[in-house]
Image 1 (cartoon, rainbow, N blue to C red):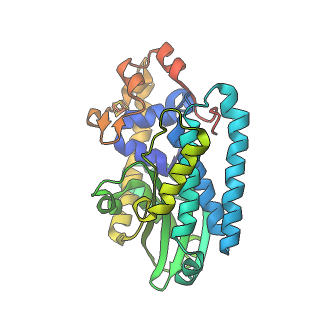
Image 2 (spheres, rainbow, N blue to C red):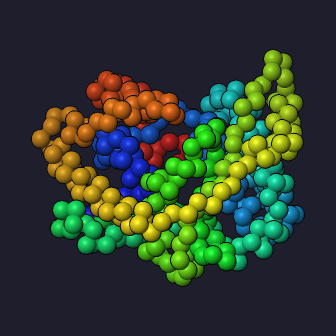
Amino acid sequence: MQIVLRSSSIRAFMQCPRLYYWQWEHLGAGLESKSLYMPFFVGDWVHQGMAKIYSAKTKKDRALAVKSILSGINEYLDTVFIPLGEEAPLDKAIATVRGILEGYCLFYDVSKERTEYKKVRIEQPFNFHLKQAFVDQAGGANMSVLVHGTIDKTVLDSKGAWLWENKTAGQIGKDHFSRLPMDAQLLTYMVAMKYFKESLAFGEPVRGVVYNVCKKTQLRGKDGESRGALIQRVVDDYLTRPEFYFQRQKIQISASHTRAHEQDIAQIAVAIKQMRERQASYQKPWRAWTKHTTQCQNRYGQCNMYKPCLYDGRADTVENLYQLRGTNVQS
Ligand code: SF4
């Protein structure tokens, strides 16, 4: 038997096995929200914009990259969102994406970055089987574990290779950076870089992560303010105080944390296998998956699978709010 995981499903399981079930196992596909969740689109558009910015070699190339991503977004909005009657939240989303991309290019000098980093790789997919010794040790002698995903960017400086992670966030708490050495998603990427040292880490030791944060604006539209005026006000704010919106830190991640995470992945895979086997004897299969109810509400708000849990998988609730993974408009 093979268990297939990715960094987001590993993190979901660590947060709560029942959450993992709803998102990755329910009806063989997992659930995703039907609603067009604007912060998701902002994050995704910034992510796409960053990939283009990183590929650009000069200031002029960067400006063209930003222009092309913004015109792609406008076309997408005209054809997908506005026909769905989703116009209202768009102004702030467009303003935020434009402010982040334009402000970022102004704040971080392309020529300085090209000097600091000797080599850069962008959007690197990976796919590896976890070392069988870890799986055996976790009690999964007759199973294998495949992990796949994509790393935003890897860079090489004078000290070694670094994983580069882009984060778009509303707010960054004081302890945010100090929690990163133990972050499940980053650790999965670190394991991937270790397994693919030649192709992801330039054959060099992996030091940690360059964590690149772009904060979303908290400015809101004013009564009677036009779309154009709001966009301009937000963009101006990004350009006027970029140090407030952009933060970047190098975080060293130790080899022992990375190795421990390999063991964690193996244990998670074995637990998933056991819960899958157990669910066959339940009329409601989700009841075979442990609930971590301490995670139903956390610092980020309510768990996004709260309703299926609260109503114990009631079909009308699930069907009204969710659809099978891979069918949403953003996929
Ligand atoms: S609502 Fe609570 S129990 Fe249910 S999936 Fe979310 S964290 Fe787990």
